[in-house]
Structures are given as structure tokens and as C-alpha cells.
Image (cartoon, rainbow, N blue to C red; front, top):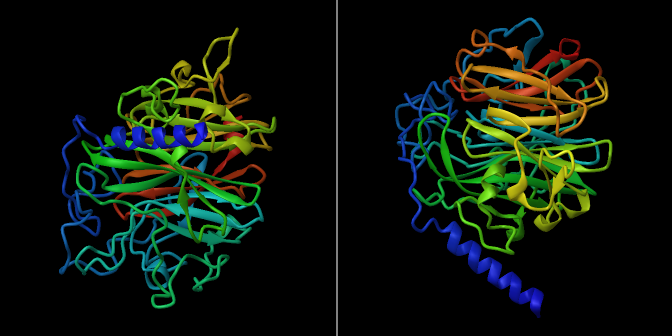
Length: 421
């Protein structure tokens, strides 16, 4: 009875705090993701989604604005090809109703298949609303990444097929996590990290209250949604909500002002058996923080331990004790233990430098190496952001996806890990 009463009390507190009462929010900017001056990439090159994600349609190219991917090369990194869009080998416009999307967070589902979660996505750009979906899922069993990522056809009801589709619309990928789509309350829900544990899929996402200046936005909370059918259906666990309202309720792990440090996240399984969660505040200009938890306790915020930076007491169960492990600015990031280097590899965008960078460390709490530029400003023309490590990288080649704002689609790249030694 006490546990049930506490759950009701926590639920009421979360509802009250997450409602945004008394919270000032950033102004909403208008945008046309299918080719207008604004854009969904949230880079310094353009503004963000407005309250509806679109100003309509009627005159745009139905297939969006994607261009052929000219080779991208730097001293250690090169492009492989488009993963999404009508010009990709996957032709996601005709096969999944996707003209544009971003992110492509990839993880092994536990049986060798790769699942990929995408952010705000668009279909036919010429229709009202541009077939906006707040998030999507694609699947692949491709083991050879040297020539790109192949996504199979989607089949209604088939949880191993290319995406989630309905019998009536077998070429239209369905949204996976719901969104209120209410201006200044919740305009979208965007995946930031994912992992599989004992056959269950865990997707960490952020609830975006409003978009502000480029690279800055306001979140209501981050939370974990789970799927037990390989991503076909998802359910958010309310006890995993990390409210971001600058409020602390003693004894309620979900409502602590320090939870603002874990609004965007990255998961990394360590060889020591711990699951590490790297977090950043909303936007692209915060530092990176670190938590760890036993995989079986991923849904219990009271079991998380936070890196304190204190040699005498390196971990604390109080999120307020967490100290940054990587200095700002850290944008969307991914982290993975790499068997080739025998180190953790972290990728993220440096918004100030306009670059995609890498760091390495023997321990997740650091010290992390100095930044190594994978793509400099010259290679990121068009707004390249959100580097996510692919789980099937092997040997010295590290494969990762990244998004380009000007085309609003996801590409695959690879980098030579010898450059990070």
C-alpha cells in the first residue's frame, strides 16, 4: 500500500512539475523542413521547427531537398553514402515515406540486428503538414558497412522487417513515441540514446517544450520507453522521467534540479559489467556528465550512481553530486567501448568550432583525451551534426552516422581509429 501511495504521489508531482507552470520558455521559430529558410537540424545554419513543424505545403518538391552526396574526406574520416532520403540506396521516400530525417541512433537489439531511431521526419513535402512524424525506427541486418547500410522492406506485423508499417499503408513508417504537439508545452519527442538488455529495447528520449535560438532549446524531461517486441510498440516508464524544471522534491528521484544534466544521453556498456550513461543539458552548449547503473536496474533512478570527480568518493547516488567529465560545449554525443583501442571512444559536435570531434579514455569518468577533429568546418558545410557510433564497427574502422542539415538526411561515415591512438 505504501509503495502504491508513493507511486501515485510521484505521478502527481511529475504531472504538476512537467506541466511547465510558471516556466519561461524560448520563443518559437517558424520553419519549413522541406526546403524553406528554416530547418530542423538545429545548427548554426538555421532555425528550428515551429509549433507545427511546418508551415504547410503545396509548392514544394514532394521528395524534399536532398542532393547527391559528394565525397566528404578529411585526414582520417570519409563518407560512405546516404542512409536515408530519396537519393539513398535505401530510397526511403518510396519505401518508407521518408523524404527527410535526422539522427539515426543505432544499437544492437541483442540478436545481431541493428535498430536505428530517427528524430523529426518528413514524407511528401507538397502536402499540408508534410507528413511530419516526430520519430521513426528502421532496422537492418547488414554486417558489411563498407558499402553502406541496407534496410530491408517493411512488412506489416513483421517485427524483424525494415520498419513499423500498417497494412493499409505498407510504405509509410509509423511514429513510435507519441507527442502532444502543443506549442510551448510539448512540440516533439526526440530519441537521444538506446540500448538492448536481455531482449528488451530501451529508448531514452527528450520531450521538447520549445525551440529557441540555433543550438538551444528547452526540454520538459527525458525518459525511457521500453519495447518487448523489437521496436514494434513502445511504452514510457513514468518512473524514469527526469523532470527539467529547476525544481527539487526531496525523496523523489524524478524531480531534482540536477536532472537537467541528463536531458540528452548516450549509453555505453563497459567491460566491467556496468552500464554507463553520459548526459548533457538540453541544447548544444552544455558539458557532459556521467552516471552508471547495473543493467538490470536501468528503470530505477534510485539505483544510479553519479561521477563526482572526487578521488576519495568517486561515485554518489545523489544526482546533485555529479560533476562534468567533459567540458562544454558538447552537442549530441555517442560513446562506445572499443576493443581495438581498448578504450572508450566518444564522438560529438563542437558547436563553437563547427566540427565533429572524438575523444578517448581508459575509464568512462576520464580523464578524456584532447579533442581530435574528425570533420572540420570545411567538411561540415551544410551543417553536419549528431555523430552516432554504429554497433557493428570492427577492426580499426569506426563507422558512424551523422546528419546534414542542408539535405536533412542521415549519412554513414567511417574513421581510421589509428588516428585516435
